Image 1 (spheres, rainbow over the protein chains, first blue to last red):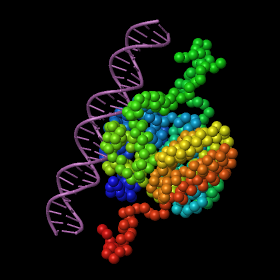
Image 2: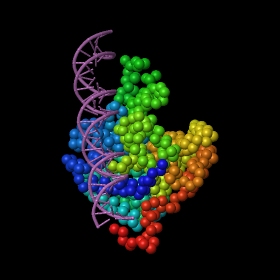
Image 3: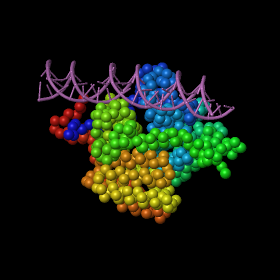
Image 4: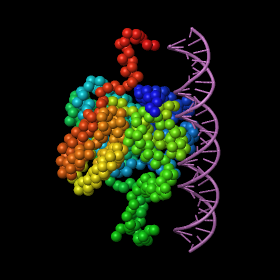
Length: 262
Length: 262
DNA sequence: AGTATTGAAATTGTCGACAATCCTCAGTAC
DNA sequence: GTACTGAGGATTGTCGACAATTTCAATACT
């Protein structure tokens, strides 16, 4: 009853390799031939780049019109984004750009301190010259993005730094977790950041990279901790931040307010 | 003096509450009623419980026949399982129960040591009597499952211990990561475990819980480390485990082997 | 005035049918 | 006997149409 055993290795090649590489060539608008992966990237970039703020409704038909693609395809992409917690799917109501709660925000940064702290410790212990090269190369990418002054580029490359750490450490599974956490961090910034959006400070990344390069394990860990905590403290996580609920609290004390509502 | 309790999250109620609650309520004779969530749970349990070994093809139509449900629904469930890395989706070929590679296996346990180490440190620092209660309650569940001698129950409750830790620590996001890692661990056991499937030793869980209860932070961390490393070393992760490639290596040295193959 | 109701428009959910792709296995040639 | 080839069947991928649900505005009622 066993049947011919499915050969083992084919899986990986098809899952991560071929498809992705082909996408990079063509642009999202009006390019036929590209399957649904392009629209995924585009939507993802738009959300992370804060062009689509948290809470935005993502109407299936509208997206289908925009990308000249069937609704079923949009649906699939939205499902994927929903699994990655970048959009929230409400049954019979649709998909919305996720709105992280204050508790979620706090936990995201706590998780990042744990996971990315591990990554930098690992990298600093290794002391690998190849890693140093990769990190420096990425720092150049960040600097270039920063020079263009295009907000979205800056945010994206800044977030990618953390993914590069996971990649350099040879930890793809953890890298996926980091990817999700970085994405959620971007949403958190969009929802709670006050003043100018600073995102990841480039200098801190540089310092971190140098620290790893020099093999200073504990200091690298401390720097990452400070880096992430710095981002977190730059947020305004104190108020409930929910307009419709505030309404009720405010009105509850007024003269005409009823004690029992229903 | 103030109004009624301001229910905080309208959003949350709609997102997670209503639908599910309705499902739970109407279960007349236990078959149709519940939509695609039941078949998800069933498949998940079957895979984690090792009734569906790694590599098994999950044919859409067959599953549709089994569950008396349309192929589209099966497809959706498979997509979800695929996002959770429990099944592997190969384009134009179908869905298969995931076959973790040796590298993946190693990384899963490395990640678990980091993440779950954090969880037990957190819990031990807290010293919370409520946590102690929850853990003890779960240990009872494990013991009961173990008494039934039903393999699937034992595995599931053993894995749930780690989820309970995340829940007790109040870390749902990390809990999701742990869930994925535990699921993958089950697949890894199915693929690489030698001898009898021991899964998580109950005694180690008990010891861990007591340690947390007593607030011994470092020892709890060390115990979790040992627990996870113990599982890992009980695996046979040395051989390449790749049938078709071994074939080539073996034959390369034989008398009739050609130097160039194509 | 404010609230409940009802109907229609808009939106999401589901399904069956068709298209594209892959696999099997004869059949044939060398 | 082995390797190629090309139907034929089996399986996955995609789409459009229909059903179910929500939303919103207009109306009716207290």
